[in-house]
Length: 90
Image (cartoon, rainbow, N blue to C red):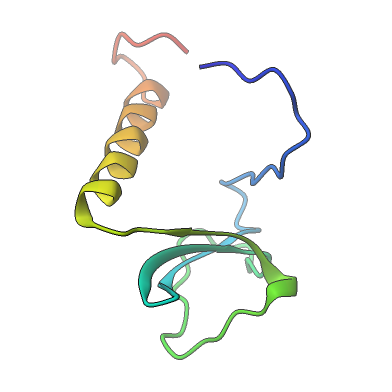
């Protein structure tokens, strides 16, 4: 899928500038993208941390495991396209 318009928030990963944490929002499991990356990829977030509105880029909630599986599947497809010698177009 190609996007036509670029007026939405863009979260660029791979530089350690975005904090990615698991948490919850309104009693649903959530994946939280925040502005507090430390420059280290994959750095752990303290479990008792509370994110504020000002520091949060986006929150993705999951109503069920199936919705999480869809996201995991899309990420795995992207991963295979980024790896060399997979035969996938870049």
